[in-house]
Image 1 (cartoon, rainbow, N blue to C red):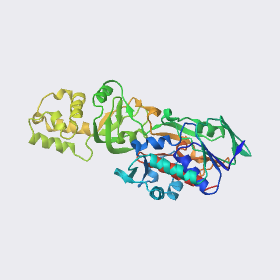
Image 2 (cartoon, rainbow, N blue to C red):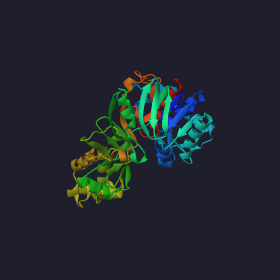
Image 3 (tube, rainbow, N blue to C red):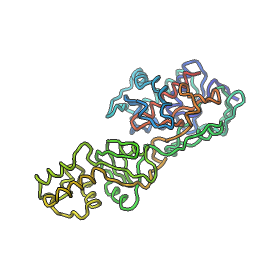
Image 4 (cartoon, rainbow, N blue to C red):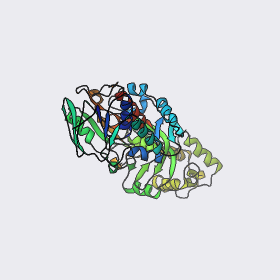
Length: 394
C-alpha cells in the first residue's frame, strides 16, 4: 500500500492544476492517469494552440442545473490569474475574437508549464494506471493495476464522456453514484449537428463553405460563423447552439444578421432588375450557398429576374432567409463533442471548495461536475478555477 496526502484521479487540465497547487502547499500528491500520457485534451485544443482562457469569463457563459454554483470559484481565480502564470513562464500568446486567448506557438507550452509546476512541487504522476475500485475506510483506498494507494483526500478530475478515443469514460460519474451523489443527465455539448435526406445532401455539397449567421434555439442565440460539413452543420455558432438544443427541436438561422434583407432586396430590384435571385443572393452569401438555397427554398424562382418579382414576394424571400428553420436529425455525439453537459450534482458539493458535503475529503473538479462553459476558453477557466478552489481547501 502506497500512501500520500492526496490522490488525484485524472491527469488533465483540472487534475494537473490541482496537483501543482496542492503540492506547493506542502502536500504529497499522487496523480493517477489511465491513458498513456497526461494532458491529451490540452494538446489537441484550439487547433493545437490551446485556447487556455477567455478574458470575458462570467457566470452567464456557463450551463448548469445550479447556475450560481460556479460564481465563487470563478471569482476567486480569474483569467488574469492564469495569464499571470502563463506570463511568468514566458509563454507567448495572443487574443482572438471575443476575448479568446491562444498560445502563439503550441498547446505543448501550457502542458509543459503545468508539468513544470507539478515537478517543482514534488508531485508524482503515474500514467497507464487503470483503477479497479475505490473504497473508504478511514482513508480513501484506490486499487489499480499498479498497486493500491491510500490518502485522506481523493480528488476526482476524470473529465466527461467527450472524445472517447482519447480515453474519456464515465468512471467519474460511476464513482459519484457509488458514494451516493446524484448525477445530472449527460449529453454531448459544443458538437456539430447532423442532418438526413435532402438537407444532408445539400450540406455535403456545401462541405467547407462558411458564412456568418445567427443560430437560434429555444433558449439561446449565437452570431458567429457556421460551417457546412459532409454530415451537417458546424462552426462556432452551431457548436454554441448545440449545448442548448434538444432532439426534436428546430434551429432558426438568420443568414444575414445585422442586415434588413427586405430593404436590401427591394434596392436590388431597383438597381439590378435583370439579375436572377441566386445572383442577388450571391452578393450577400457564398455563391455555392446562394445556388443551393434557391434550389431548396425558392425552386420556382428559376431564371426570373428580380425586377419582375412583386415587393411582397421579395419580402417573403427576405423573411425566409432571416428565419431559415431546419430540424437536425441529431448531433455527432461524444465522438467529436468538445465537452460533456451535465455531471455530478453541484448541490452535493461546496461551491467554495468542491468538497462533497456527505464525504469529507472527497472532491470533484473540472468537467466531471455539472458546470459546462461556452466555446472559447471558458471550460479551461472552469478547470483552473475549480482546481484552485479545491486545492486551497486542504
